[in-house]
Length: 90
Image (cartoon, rainbow, N blue to C red; front, side, top):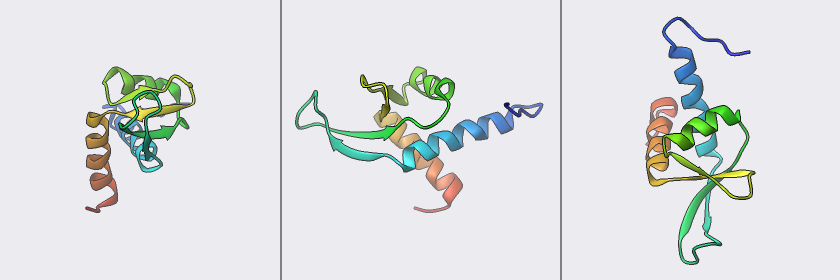
């Protein structure tokens, strides 16, 4: 069940925190399809409807294996911004 306040602030925070959690559990690895290129990847672990929204906004790409996501450069920047916002670290 989704809880949403009248202005949608809770829903926005929920999405930001889902993004942050995906980002924090991410890791860098060599791309199999593009040797020599590094990708930043995380295993899917949160509601797909939220992850689909992140993909539409081009923050992530869904990996062809269907079980993980790859952060775009814009997504990595957003993750760092949210890490600083919520965790108060540099």
